Image (cartoon, rainbow, N blue to C red; front, side, top):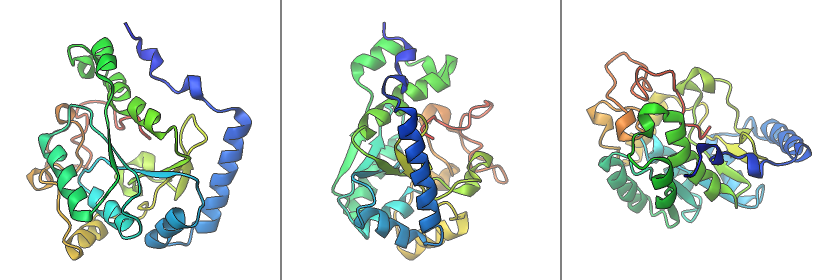
Length: 247
């Protein structure tokens, strides 16, 4: 049987000097671009050869249309990595196709854990009950790590207002355990600005948002959120888990 300890970055961890050099580069980029707005930052990242290869990682979730729309205005052929965990809502799978078609995205790559690996580690799809972190590692983190191996940077949709753990976000940070850089163009976008952008550009909405799901993950681990609750309260409810492990 394949052991869960295999689903780590240890075998490909960069040397300490490479990590330190990447950390210095992150600090330099944050100093250079800290006064840029989102659109100018994205244009710089995608057109000025700051990085050799850049991908966007999108869940095609509640707010995803904003960043995908901004990127599509610059380059519709940017690789967009979408992780299909085989546990997503059917609405998310449909929305992924609808939004990609609407924006004219030409390079969406659907990532999945191999059937052989899933059958070896989680043959009964019960891992999420006993070890949700391991389930996320199997179905999300490892497939993404494998896909990102050819890129030196990736774009995320993280925002400071989403969680206490994200309040200190900058435009650039280092991907944990690697020398790869994460780019966070929407750090200062709050819900009102996101809603205004969606409305102004008449972007398709994820259908589950109107049904009480302001933050959408895998179906078994996502519940509706009551009025007044934190938007991410429905993710891994009644659990100390707050992140899937991608960040």
